[in-house]
Image (cartoon, rainbow, N blue to C red; front, side, top):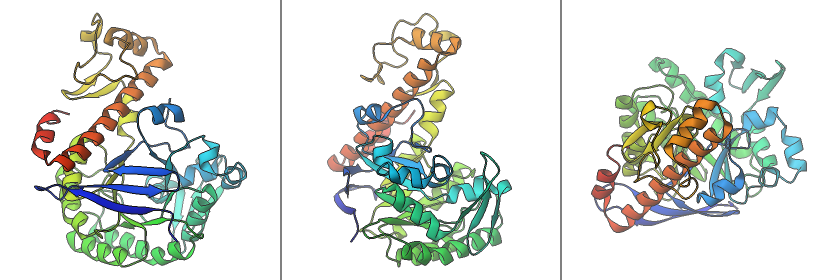
Length: 366
């Protein structure tokens, strides 16, 4: 019996965009939704109370990193990841498939699984489909992701096909390892090749996953290759299940993918850019420490002011960045995640009201 349920409540009359609700053991999440990335059980510079205040109900954490430190057994002893990080909402965990690609210099992969050399102490760490799902079961998260092989960009067609083959080989093993009530999403691979994407979508969609993700489309490829892959793949996924686009987070890319029928997103972009003094506004990205803000006693953008930090002037935030104060990172992160929270809320409302064109006009510079 799955611990999640998904319902589409509204459809856009001019695109494939849809609005829905994802019901989990830790509350309902309205979709389309964006998940802040808390790789190691924390969204950098913020606490769980900050995310709750910003309106987020679902965050992402990472199986590989948390299994290495502090360890799945310790988290389980503390009552699961929700209690460990004092988070009241839902949690989705990435299985470690992305690390298969990003830590390629530290791993050996075969049809059984992946063996990593820990980036922390050099010790060996093995991740099989069974262990990846088992660890996520120990965490007690609301959505577990299957272990897949994520091919890098660029790669040859044969390399993309081989990664897809192994992902398909592992898919039933992921499902067989589920605990009672554990929800697991499948992942479609295939690189930028339409025939491989179609084959993978058909294979993964036919299995008993609780949702389906599009993987391998935020691994360095240019936008002109990423978007066609999303546009082609999303409609092939089951109508009745949530569709998740992994790792994509630029506002324009989110708008494009929602229009293709995608429901869920995650990306480090808003938090990472914040730590590099970049703010998202309706007028585009802003360099928070540029000289033009040195004496500006007001917001960076009057149309992108949020309660979480509206009391602080651009001049003050610039000063904090220039002085190396940690508060600058926190305020910028709050700002960017508030911007993304508003973006997703306005996307949902545009789908409900059928005002997609007006929404695109509002975010055309973002």
